[in-house]
Image 1: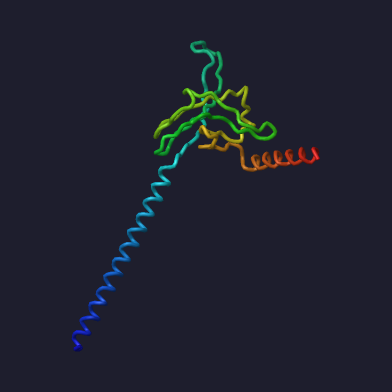
Image 2 (image 1 turned 180 degrees about the vertical axis):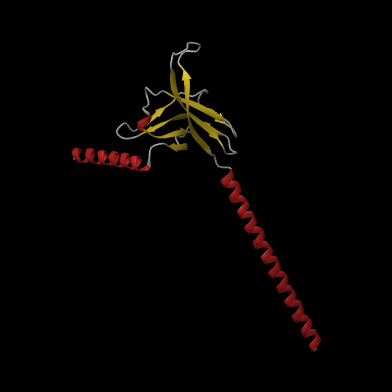
Length: 177
């Protein structure tokens, strides 16, 4: 074997190593880009519900001057995501001691399917739901999951309510022993 054949073998093996390094880098870049695109699609395709509150002043009787006005509270649920969502109920989660969920009548027949940028509104009956006792407004699906929540009570009030509820449960179990 001559020196020139050894150099050509070395050059061939180096070029193969360089080619395999280039292919490995290319494959890792493509895989990384694919993972990023898939994660973006996953997060963009999740259901996104936005809740908002609107207070309206409406005359009690149309056409009668000086009849007075009443204030109505509307809870507006809007699908801001790309995926269609089925809303089964809209309501208020109440603070302790009332706790629980108070369902509201909606302008559509429930369950309502909301596609992209569609909305529905629910009218709050202020005789049944005291606005001072509302922790949050919620929209729920058929499984009972909360798809959207709009907190209206301050954090400290919510924390106090949850602690009072927790201590009430604890005291009931201690009395039962």
